[in-house]
Amino acid sequence: MVDNTSNNTSNFIRNIIVDDLEAGRVDKVITRFPPEPNGYLHIGHAKSICLNFELAREFKGLVNLRFDDTNPLKEDTEYVEAIKEDVKWLGYDWDGLFFASDYFEEMYNRAVLLINKGKAYVDDLTSDQIRETRGTLTEPGKNSPFRDRSVEENLDLFERMRKGEFGNGEKVLRAKIDMASPNINLRDPIIFRIAHATHHNTGDQWCIYPMYAFAHPIEDAIESITHSICTLEFEDQRPLYDWVVQETEMEATPHQYEFARLNITNTVMSKRKLKLLVDEGVVDGWDDPRMPTISGLRRRGFTAESIRNFCREIGVTKSNGTIDSKYLDHFIREDLKLKAPRTMGVLKPLKVVITNYPEGQVEWLDAEINSENPEMGMRQIPFSREIYIEQDDFMENPPSKYFRLFPGNEVRLKHAYFIKCNEVVKDENGNVIEIHCTYDPETKSGSGFTGRKVKGTIHWVEATHAVPAEFRLYEPLILDEEEESDSSFLERINPDSLIAEQGFVEPNMKDVTGQDKFQFFRHGYFNVDPKHTKEDHIVFNLVVSMKSSFVLPKA
Image 1 (cartoon, one colour):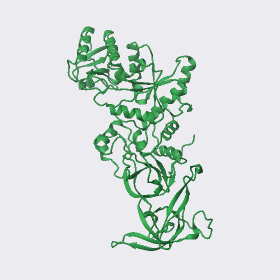
Image 2: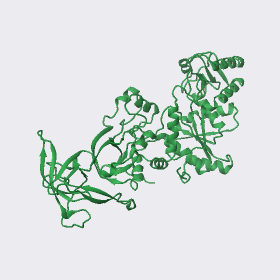
Image 3: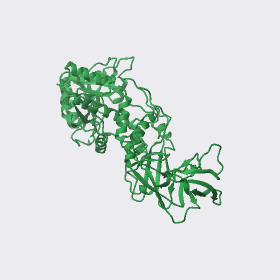
Image 4: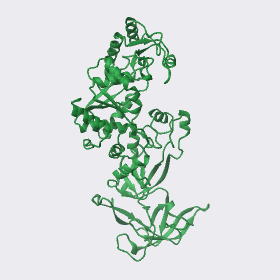
């Protein structure tokens, strides 16, 4: 597993932990990562994972992975297993693995305790009626006509709810707090509702389920969580969190702390919208390389180390903001530049015939695997009379200051020779289908030739040994993501989010396997797609382009 004890960058939550330890308010730090298993984790969850696991490890504490599975209508074992895989892939392991559903009996008993204390009641109002009587930010709510039911009646009705005597929505259990509270979350919130649905973990054992706001603080207290870290949208619910812990008379008293969630430009961070993309077939699954899910980033070619470094660098604050997506790109470039082998791939091939090169001859040229990391050694590249270059590296009538190949011009082939274009071959429609060149054998790369200079260097692949490959190029799936309806959201799919090109790679690439990563000269970093690469069909996903105009902010 990753060494996650070395990141001691100061942030306000870390400072709170230091103060708590020094003051003796806590003996051992215990944190938790509590996802709901209703979808796959995305890059925003990675920030929370890194924060919870690394804080616990730094202070030699414990960290739990807990599934907040209180809604059987949306949750599934598939999501549970995917979340576990993602957390492990990021480099973390948990001390305890728990489910909210492990505590359903305890939550039921704590609700009974509230009823006995006169702090909860069964309400017959519909969800719409409860919403209408809740009030507004400037107007108090109105008491339910069922608010003053006796303890005995509430106990009887709640037990009958558990036995399944009522249908969905017929009754709910509400906390009895204050309908005039300035905090709407304290206006008699629902804490149990009826849902006749099979639960992924408990089957049909229950037909009533606790609400998240009631379940979560109880879970934290049962597990003796010392620092319950969540995002800012839960800040207004902290008084309810504290109320539940106090009024249910939990032995441990956890505390909730909020930090700013991660927002990234041109990135969908809503799990509901991500699920919509999957359900509507816009993408080929939760792990589509265009998705900001951890599994999608992994399949695209991002490394766990790059994501961890990104999450550490963006820091932990109490003010919301948006991070430029190019910032994440920077960290994957930094991680791969010394690890990824360098190679050449031609995405839009144009055949070149070198007319003065001997027919049938193949020579093998030496090239470094990674010029920035000589320890990776050398590779051999075949060269012969016929090669492929990029279509974009040739123009019949080029503009000024175009230094690649055109009639009469000379360029260097990367790792090989100078070639000069002499003839252009076209089809009946006038399209260029082949060009003829000559080469200068004195200009072999590494020979020390100094006779003349050329301004252009292009990459290529030898034709007879070339390995066919598909290259998938990615752009943001949704441009300028904003709050909007689901229908308008789907209308704003970027039609160019995926472009597939057919081309060729060097012969040493014929045995690549899923998740192998390479830097293709001039194109960028690519990852072998583990889902679509077969023995006779290699698919490369563009991880990130070679360069960016993005400048890291100064510390």
